[in-house]
Structures are given as structure tokens and as C-alpha cells.
Amino acid sequence: MLITHDREKLIQTIIFFVKNTRFCGKVKLFKLLYFLDFEHFRDTGRSVTGMDYFAWPKGPVPVDLTAEIEMPQPDMAEAIHFEEKPIRNGSQTMLMISPQIEFNGRHFSKRELQLMKRLADQNRDAQSEEMVEATHLENLPWDKVYNQQGGHQKKIPYELAVRTQETDAVMRIANDRMELIRGLG
View 1 (cartoon, one colour):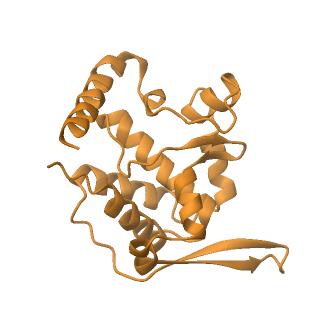
View 2 (cartoon, rainbow, N blue to C red):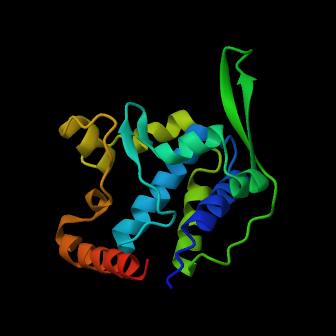
């Protein structure tokens, strides 16, 4: 039986980004997860967390995680505490994310860990507002779905992250992996 560890990797990735960046609320976390999954897919044909992202007005949103933050499953609740806190003199709230356990990288490949570290280093002090533009750049996956296709709140296909000249090779790898998972599942 094939075990993907996507769930454990999602939880551990959240812990990693919260511990290795500043100002990591919901929006910044969503951007980091999106960058991680789409860059890794572009290079390898698979995401790190297994999440789907949807094209919302302010950028890519992992809808399942959004819902889970409201009511975390037991494994998430044991590992991470989520709490809304007032900011800017109470005019807004920010989701405060507090790891309850230490990061454990045992299920990650060396490539995944290097990408996580690079993204954390690049965005360590960034505010979420500064990261929004990077997800909205022309011809990147969110832009292709939201602006070019008018796909508001539609799923962003991972294959949009793949360079045109590499599409066949990367998608062949991705499809082979999906068939393997279905066959063993």
C-alpha cells in the first residue's frame, strides 16, 4: 500500500513556515503553501501537501484548509493552535497560528526541505500585502484562471505551473503517479 504522508506534510509545513517567518497569518501562510506546492509541481510533477487551490479575488486559496482552520481535525488541533486576534487598534483581525509541537521533517525529501527553506528565507520579514502581487503576476497560474479565463473561485490546475516546453514530460510523470496512487488506493 502506498502512503503519501500528504496530511502529515501539510501540518509540518504549516509549523515550519510559522516558525521560520515573521507575521505569518492566514494570508501569508496561504501564499507560502501555494508557492511551495506549485513550484514543486513545476519541477517534479507533484505537489508537497496535496492540496487544491482556488482562484479567489485576493489570490490562490486552499479552500479545504480554510474550512479546517475554523474546525481543525484532531491531528491538526493537537499540532497547531489557531486564534483570531485584533490588530491595527481593533480595526482588523489576524489569524494567529501557534505550533504546539516541534517541526519534524522526516516525511520530506531533501528537495522539499530546500524549497521550504528558500521560501521561508525569501519571505521571512514580508507582510502578506507584499506577497499578494507575486501570486497575481501576469501569465502565472492564478492570473490564467482568474483573469484570463474568468474562473472566479475555480480550481487552479497544477499543470499551469509547468513551463510550456516541459509540459509533456512533467505531466507524464504526474499522471503516472496519479495512476499508481489510484491503483494502490
